[in-house]
Length: 181
Image 1 (tube, one colour):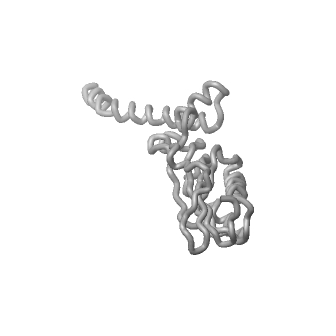
Image 2: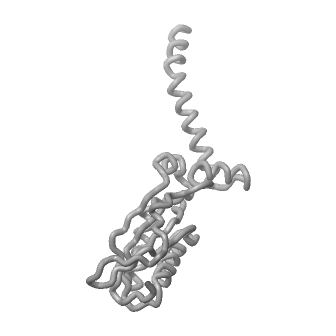
């Protein structure tokens, strides 16, 4: 498939990262707003993340996610990749980095059914990969020096350990204090 006619819907899939203290939904909502302001329709938006543990432990650091946006085009385009480039640029405007992977696997012409473009479907490749999420942040911190997000991650881990230590020792300290009276 090469030509994309006006009002067609191009399925765009990207693998991107969150920004500091933002969720994948925040990023995608901002990207959608930018596209709508430029005259594109955005439908059927979804996100998929690497995992709950990476999200909890990765607070304050950038972690990967995959987004799927069905983008309705206002005019003719020569190729689905042209539309995908516009979507990638919107992600760049929001996150400050281009997506690490992107694809436009299908186009639906007005009144028609989805037609394959020959580009791969990213939803089958998974999110993240090696060096992603919390393990990637810790590896990066060790290999390239500590960044602000890595410092935050380490600080959070120390705080959790301290709280667990206080809660764990609290009954023992009360017993000792009572025995000393």
